[in-house]
Image (cartoon, rainbow, N blue to C red; front, side, top):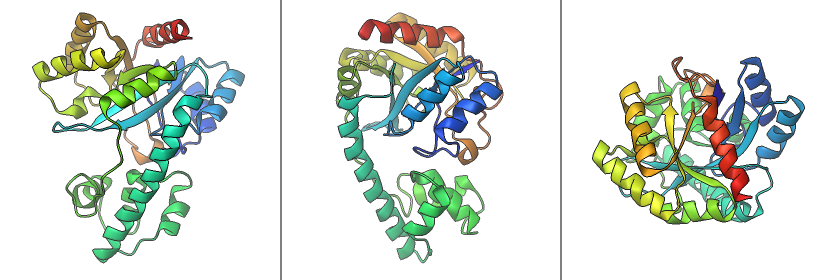
Length: 281
């Protein structure tokens, strides 16, 4: 059992990078990658503890990408080591834009008569702030009944307090990861909301930009969709990866390495990814 898509308190997870490694060991995972949103701040502590705990570990990041289609696009980047200077400058710029976005969301919530402050949110999140933290705070304050309702009513695209995010284009995101000697992988293709033919054609286009892999095994992918993605990856020549998208208590139904309980990512996904990274060194 492995997990190549996880989040820590460096972005919108509830486990610190170090705690995530200890949890992976406790759950008997054979390999792990940390892929926080738009930041690599958690990689160094996770990397150090992974070495101490003898846990095979890949450094990663998940970057939000501009997408003109019906869904949303996230790009995973994988690396061998936590120091990635070519990536850091762009991620710092995106982080500043995310902080401005959080302020705009709070302003919109205030305008709707919902009392919430940035200071309150920082105290609640105990780390970097993302929309899941805002959603959970709205639940805690009794403004909504559930995490899902918070997104539907206030936080998702088109909702009352939604604020757009500064995004890279697919070409820019893929180029950024390649220039940092990383492997770019399309995260959770299900969220693009494309039909099978559209998705296969889009994967071919992304490969022309330099995409090297696709996240085939994922919490929300059905067995049928997973099978389709395996065929696509083999036909197009893309690496097959997988992950749960673990966030700790911010997505309590998703378990590390197991997703909703039926996720089983082959160890060879880690091995093939690592081999490719070693070739790029």
